[in-house]
Image (cartoon, rainbow, N blue to C red; front, side, top):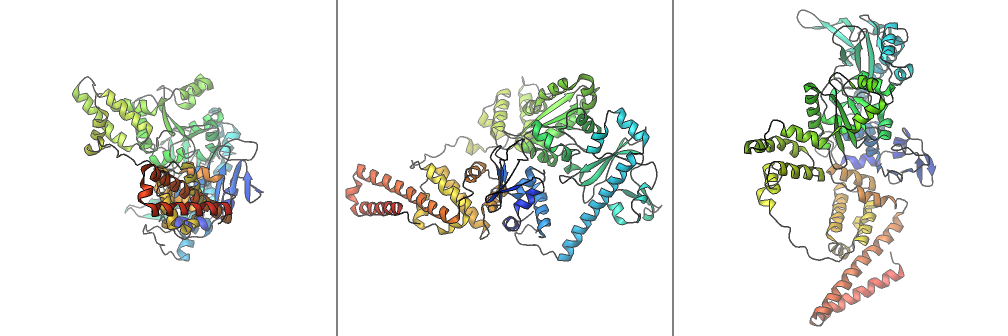
Length: 601
């Protein structure tokens, strides 16, 4: 766990412009920087980066966030990975003890750790270059690729290579063939003696006589290899082992190459083979990635959901394909919401995606993608399979099977519809089903919300206050007691927003900024996207102007509340009963109006 308190410190010590400039060409535009949005195709720049607020926003597609958010949304990194990437570039040690305090890591330890990662990455890059050069002179490998319809352009795009048929081909690249890093990266294997002991004197290349598929991370670095035989040898496919750089369950082949195509297409197609990815890219479907010989994982689904709102899994239509689809379904459950979808495309058992496309053509392949089974339909197929809904036992069994699936779904409109549909199919009251699924407690299901006191509707000016406090958190500490009391009488939703922003400011502490509060809300799992979008238009506001605007807004809040109370007292006769209070309210109202007229800060 990364302590939440570390995030504001990190954001205050990095420059978002320099982070984004590695991926997007930016030009100075007043106090900000502008460029073509990397999240959608455009000809006129609408992508703006604010170095003051440490925030980016596209006025075309609405994408926005901090440097952390950018690395997650564009580079496809996870939260932890993005934090480590930024901290590494800034020379900051990331605390990992979960206590909220810095874990003391000596500069020597940090430097040694970083040096090891860089050394491994450099070795993989050299190996990738070696394999690419070997492919140019390997006629059997070239013939194999041509036979699969792979052009030189596509081979170069994916960095395809060839591992020669020899035991120590890498010795020509790495003069120190005994270096421990060669074993640590999985490029070289050490033979064991009769006692099971490894010997650096008896080594050999892991990959021999194989087409090499470099696996890249979101930064484009080679972190592992997939290798396919060009004869009848076994195993047909061989992957790099898990290393410091490479974890199979967290990576996807072809994601680095497919990122822009995924955004353009609006979806990503997930297949099972390296050659499917390469061949489909050759045939006009570059928005494809592949799992690395393992079942789909939740980490992979999460990584894909950062790139697009729709993930389409392609499987064979046989039992093995159905089982693989079920595992993909289970991995997707925590990430499917009202605006994030998953579909399942089942191909004839005698076809893989490559052969299906070549046999039936692009239109038929696109039609198959469009006709992929929706998440909810496949989910109900799995829930209801083998259960006779005409019997009590079948209905009860269906609810039992459904429970872990529905519990794993996030609360959303989709989950609500799924529960409602299941209630209909199993002839159960929806409230009773929620209890059966352990989503609601019996004591909660019939409870009615208490009647709310009517409040003065001042949502507009209330959100104005919140926007200013979010943009300039330092103003929270300047609020007067009377202003805080007035805000407590806001519209209930606005009051909740105000409370969250104020509390977040105190939690983050003196280092609170707009960017750090945005990350605080992301960290806490709360969705404040709409409020953040409202703030975007005020990014050029300076602190002095914001302070005046805040005071004016707070005065308007107090004035409206006082006017409402005076009116109620007059109508009820309480003005005569409590003349002093009535007079005090009138005097306060006159004073606030005078301050508004004078424009006092």
